[in-house]
Amino acid sequence: LTPGPDDVAIAEDSLEALLRLRYRARIDLGRSEDDYDALLDDLLKNA
Image (cartoon, rainbow, N blue to C red; front, top):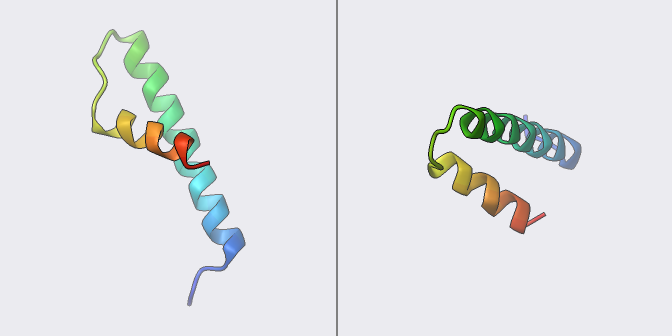
């Protein structure tokens, strides 16, 4: 099966939501940014 445009959009939205939650949790814990935070930045720039 080949994913359709709707499947890709849902996956991208889910990934962005997960990365946003992860980022907020890391900030609340006082952790520094990492590669996944950079990935979120890239996703938001390309949105």
